[in-house]
Image 1 (tube, helix red, strand yellow):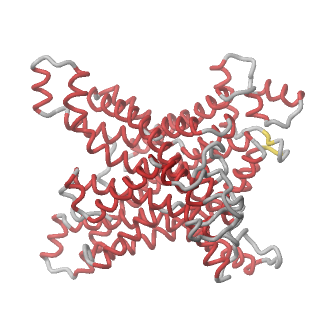
Image 2: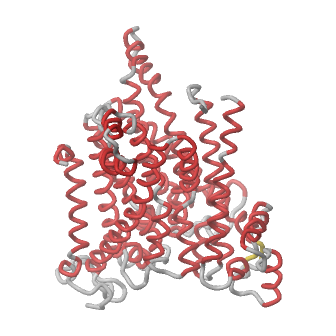
Image 3: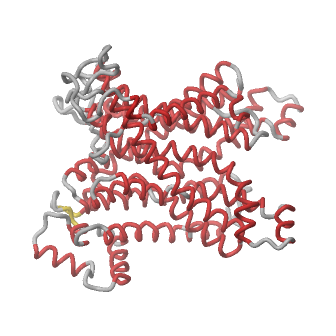
Length: 273
Length: 320
């Protein structure tokens, strides 16, 4: 981990990511007001009293962003948890077993990878009603293919190494070999895809909120941007800040992904931006 | 590219199409309420519901229903939108061109600019130009398309007045012929630019990495050793670096659609995105399902086309 902090991009990435995680965890402490509460006159520009201004209902924009970050990161975390479990399981089994099982699992992975996640989420929310649980479910069960492919590739190469043969020789069973010997070596590479995936989930969730499909019970960054659309001509701050928060959170996760990828691939000529 | 590769690749379309149809079918049947509502919308009458029930065999066992549903979809029958009072397919086909124009112009613009920026950055690797390009690419990649669209609308449209804020043509001055085309292009410029910036970032990164990787290979060392000018050397590297740019289009087309929908929502560009938005508000489920199926189909077709293009461009690609 400390080696990932050697580049300025890595430092910035980890700083941003930790900052947003901190913001999400301490939302109630950091936010000066309830994000749903009307605390002042409507459409106040940023001032000392309201750091990032107020919206059309006099709600504090900064508090909305802090709580919106919490919603975004909670969704991203839950989605990534589901996607990682499925992706690691599918990838490990496919890579370790090989043959027909591998073929079948990989064809399935390709089929799921085709599914346009955003549009599937739209019909699910339209038919089941809004709610974070279904957003998490839909994005979770559709976001694992990239993880599965990386884990499979790693497992494929690890399974032929001597230490795996040695584990076999002393009588270790397949689940134990996978869990204790193969996966601990495959997961670091998978972390690259996982962090990039988390970034894309934040963008997708914000997009859903933006077209009005967010959960009305919790403030989300997408909802703030959607609400800002109608007041673009009179309240630029409602547009500027929520979107900037999304961009910074995504930038942070992408930088973390890049830093981790440099680690697992030190021979790559030149670092990518 | 062998005929066998072509056949194998085309055969892979079958599970993808099946996965899409099964997904839509499962959503229709798992959703709360009568599945007939998902196929016929909420605004039909009893006689119409009975008709749809019979047509989709909703009183039959589930596996049979799936086959009937698949057969209807494959025939291009996606049901009727009661809100619009027309078949879903005709509504979709009416809206698709606007979205495709937006996506294609963004894709072309981002490919040209991305290749230029990527090559420039690779040639000046780790120098200030490279650093600026890399930072810009990272920021462009992280920025939500709808926010970029809002900022562009605020500054370049509302602020300077150079571009129209919304729509596809000027409703106040109805024009025809070349004037009409110019009007559409004027309206297209900002949404396409916004969408292109999102895509540009990825293309730039891929081209830069690709050129750098190529520059480190033996054939480049040979080219340098025989005294080729640096321009010619970079051209050698560039050809192989283009391959990932082609493949990534296939993988990105779903995200490009998502971006287009969100950008359309900001600029009121009358494509599938606006249709999606209005259908969400009217709970016009047949149309929403239709958009999902149409986007899936375009994604599948694009993936096949880019894979074939890749195999054609790179003779080393073989299906084992």
